Length: 174
Image 1: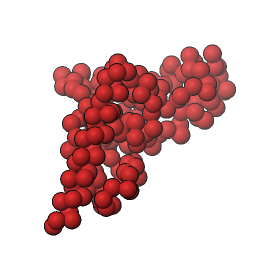
Image 2: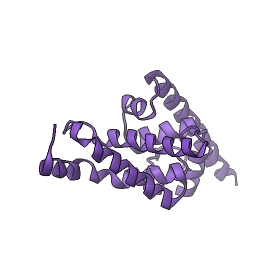
Image 3: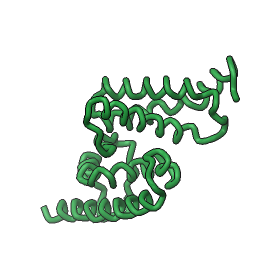
Image 4: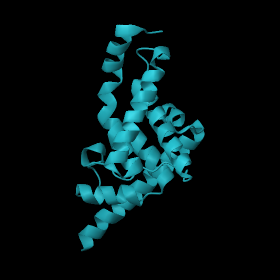
């Protein structure tokens, strides 16, 4: 257990550096900058309330993302609109695309390919390949079985590659 001033210092060192990543994800989830800020604020409030039980040195980013997804789910349930998590808006630097494909697509084209994926594939793809979470961390964040995450990520990557190649070959013929 962590108490007092030491607790505040550890929180600042371990939790606060993830603010931008949380905001990017929250913006993708809400597609509304004001609501995204609210999600991040509520995520940090919830994290602070339960930080006394946090074990320093564990994966704080994954812990914060789990809280963010719960915050969003709570928000949707209040509105009576609970649905699968959707990460829609992904910034240019947020994605790593293999340059070995037929040609380099402009970032807007890459985003179109990402956005064209079904939500459940897009979500795990962004969490794994953009945020760098492990299969287990994604399973914990989304509260899904590990096998489901592995399957969705594999299928999502294949779908992304296929659509990416189609887009790049379509540009060659144009």
